[in-house]
Every structure is written in C-alpha cells, then in structure tokens.
Picture 1 (cartoon, one colour):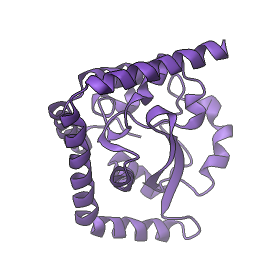
Picture 2 (cartoon, rainbow, N blue to C red; picture 1 turned 135 degrees about the vertical axis):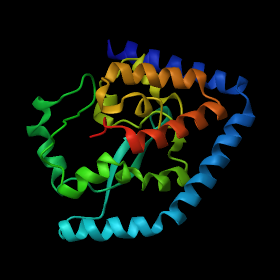
Picture 3 (cartoon, one colour; picture 1 turned 90 degrees about the horizontal axis):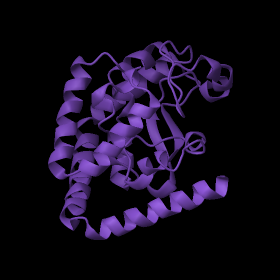
Length: 225
C-alpha cells in the first residue's frame, strides 16, 4: 500500500513538472520579483513593530526566545525552517502529545481554540496574525511565497494521501485561499480543496485578489486562533 502511494506521489510530481514547462514563465518570474520586493519592503517598514513585539515577548517570558522556528514541508516535499514570533510557552512542543486528543479540527492538522500553551501576548499576535510576520524572511529566502498553500508539518505530510500531496506541488505561502475563506473554521479536507483550487487558478491577478482579501480578513475576521 505504501509503495503504491509513493508511486502515485511520484507520478503527480512528474505531471506537475511537465505542466511547469507549459506554464507561462512570465507569471513565475513576476511572482518571484513581487515576493522579493514585497518581503523586503515589509521587513524594512515593519522593523519598529518587530522590535516592539520582541521586547513584549521577552518581558512576558524572559526564559523563552523571541522567535519560534519549526521544520515545515515546502514544494516537492523539501523541508525548511519557518519562522514566527513565539506565541506559546517555551515547552509547547513537549506538551503537544497530551493535547492531541483534544484536537478540534479534522485530518492531518492540530487546532485547539483555547490552547493552554498560548501566552497572553500570544493570543493577541495570533488573532492579528502578527506572529506570522517573520515569514517575510522565508519569502525573501525563497522557501515561501507571499501567496500559496500553508506549509505543513512533516508529521502531517506522513498522513497525506496522493491526492492531498498535491498541496506540495507549488511554493507554500504566507497567506492563501484557505486563510481568506474561513481559516480555523474550516477542516483539513476543505483546506485541501481550496489549496487545489488556488493551484489550478493561480495567476498574478489571483494572487493580488488573495492579498487584498487577506488585508480585509486581518482587520475584520474573527476566525483565527
């Protein structure tokens, strides 16, 4: 069974490589240039906010680090470190096993609305998505794009079917169709469907649409936790 899934995943990767040859190179070049300019401007303009959040995190928990890095899975299964502002207690990963049974979402994801590992400041920066801002560095490095499917954890990918593995056919993003369509209120299956819709419809104009929707969600949405 496992070998069959591996063969299916390999076939999917081969199919997408063939598709890339046919895909308009202009879009890929444009997308990367936009990512570099957007991430660079964001890091410069938001540097005062970065400093403020860093100070507040250290004031709340002097023992923990300001940034949280975690191995995520990107395009074609390549692993990389994704960065965030730390929004949980410093031993959050060790506590996860005791909370798995309280998972409030479906499929290969873990979500818990009142996660006891989240700090007081963490609740605010997660609600406003400020905790995600360090991912601009990932965008600048090329690990991520401004728009794309969210990069999953390795343990999540181990549970993927060949169909779900299609999420990894493109560079993952800081925001995407899932985030602007309900985010934490949607289950894993719905997230996969939205990601595949994005992959099939992606274009520069569609990326701009998702970015504009993201701004709206940041200020008015109540679905993030």
